Image (cartoon, rainbow, N blue to C red; front, side, top):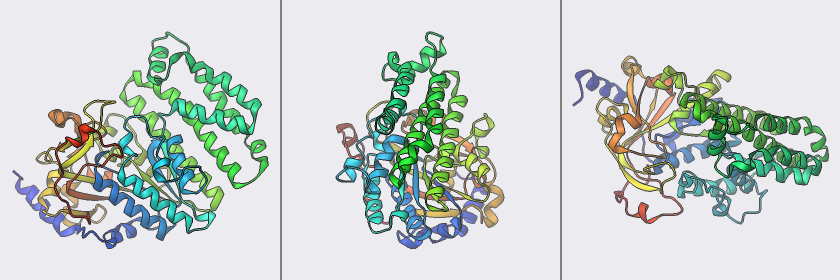
Length: 447
């Protein structure tokens, strides 16, 4: 049961929010909030909710069409996402949007191989086909899990661009050959001292590519510059992934910080590249709330963790907007364990006193809350409050321990989109386990 103070806060929030009507105009206030920002980071409270993906895509469409945003950077591996980028810019060999998603094979494939991403990729290709070469928006990955795929991409590029350099790269990357396909085996063996690490080799390979950039680009042309940047970024992924997999056995804070710092560095590198190529670049980021919301406002920051939202705010003062999502109940696509099959799971109601429970008490199916213009709700919302985070694994039986942390919401995000009752994201491969999940109810198509 809500306390008297919470009841007053709910009333203040209700007077501040903008109800979502399911129209294009819902995003008008967010467009005003974005203003002339160069980076807009849009989160998600789960990795498997249809409404989060759909609304995020609709807002991104407006940012591309009306504000000239030139890239979407997502919580995905660089080589997998770059295949989509080639497709949407008519530079690849894929026949359609479905084929361009084919490299997303690693768990959790449903994060990107789903109906909502497919719709957005199809829209982005159509949008680009009607624009100039200069205006084509790309799709890029920020993550670093793709150790082996990125090594393969570097070698493929050098085989074409500089066969002698390709031989040197093969010799360096051969350091990983006896560890098998699972990078965690590499991290485990090197951490225990069972085998020497490959740090020196991957650093040398990245520096080699960077040093030879000008001569490799001497061929000229937009395509050559694009290919060189793609290869350099893959080499950077290999370098940082090597360190990441070693750090996994040193504790969560170390590996988390390496991963999010890599994301922030990749975003900066992408911003610099696109600015060199076509002027003042503006980028939309899609990632989980735990990466997008400023870590300094949460338990993460208190434990020494940094994240993408915090680092981007610090590096680009005044040029960043952070937008989060929340839900109170519904269904979600998630696994029970790492590497498990996608399941359609029922989300438990938000815990009493949590942000989700507070927003549920407002009594609207969906709303936008500008956290920079809170009015009477300002003071109470700045107090620490529980917030839920569901990633690719959902364990409702241990939900409080597994999925909640404390946050000061107005310091974490600039705005929140709350959808009270949500439904599971639809994977392109609907397994029997997913089909057996609790069937969703009928939801308003506008939300």
